[in-house]
Amino acid sequence: QVQLVESGGGLVQAGGSLRLSCAASGRTFSGYTMAWFRQAPGKEREFVSGIRWSDGNTYYTDSLKGRFTISRDNAKNTVDLQMNSLKAEDTAIYYCASEFAVGGSLYRPDGYSYWGQGTQVTVSS
Image (cartoon, rainbow, N blue to C red; front, side, top):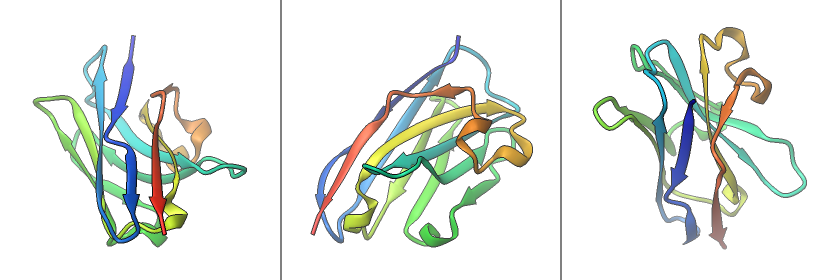
C-alpha cells in the first residue's frame, strides 16, 4: 500500500524559504508521477509542481516557476519542494500526491489516487 508522508511545513516570514519533503513507501515508484498540490482556505486544491520518477522530468504551475523547485532522491524515495521568496499568498496546506502513468491528468487533483495528510505552510507578511 502506498504511503506518502509530508514534512517541513511551518511559519515563515515573507521573502523566506521552506523545504517540504514527501517520503514515499509501499512500492517501487518507477512509472509514477509525484506531485505537490496546495489548498488555501476557501479555495480549490491546485497543482504546484510534479516530477516523473523514471526520468526526472519536472512540471510547474507557470506562476510559481523560478521560486519553487521540485526534486527527487531515488535512494531515499523522497520528493522535495524547495520554496523560495515566499509570499503571503503561498499560505496553504501542501499535499504530496502520486499516480501511475498520470498522463493528461497531471495538473488535476482527480488524476491522483494516493495522497499524504498535508503539511501547513504559513507565510506572514
